[in-house]
Image (cartoon, rainbow, N blue to C red; front, side, top):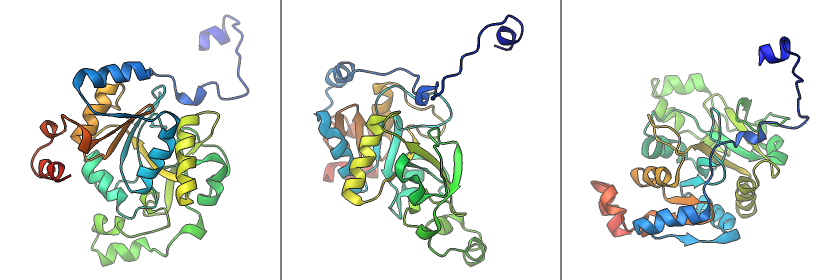
Length: 271
């Protein structure tokens, strides 16, 4: 590119809007392809059409952890709502749950918030777009709870897990110990599907922020295909899998038992 522009006189065109198209540049899979995979393997599912947004929001409000697979896969360093694990940002237990039972990583590690673009200033000290989840901002002061990191370090003798469990704001699942958060703003233009999910969640709960982390476990790449999404879903304690407008619940999966072990098998049987 340097040679083309600098030596050979190629015209450089810069679009006034986002030429990266929200970073949704990877492959996508149609409902037909998804259903062919599910039917071939005998997996039970529900096809919900436009009702999928409301259903996802209801499951989020019920503190379910959801694997969301829709549209073109993200390109770049962050999950941006197309290959994401999403959850209720208001939950006091969600951060530890996601780390221990879904991501299999250290419990103190923070999760990022996705927020409707028009509401970002209501939750964070951020006054611009952040569609790529690359900007860090503080949680708004009106949403914080009194929390002194140094005092808690002394009180709990440096035990980060106990410190992380303390509620630091009214969106605790995405509030780090220093009140910081790595924010993704979601607009209807760049990602209408994810926007509608969060908007429906707002209608139910009054909150327009959800947890958004990459759809994978530690040591594995982000999922790309419906098969990878299903296998990751079944190997973790995720509650719901959404593939476009198709929804699966773990207790309804015919092959769920053989992919679970130990205590989880007994819980699956009880359900």
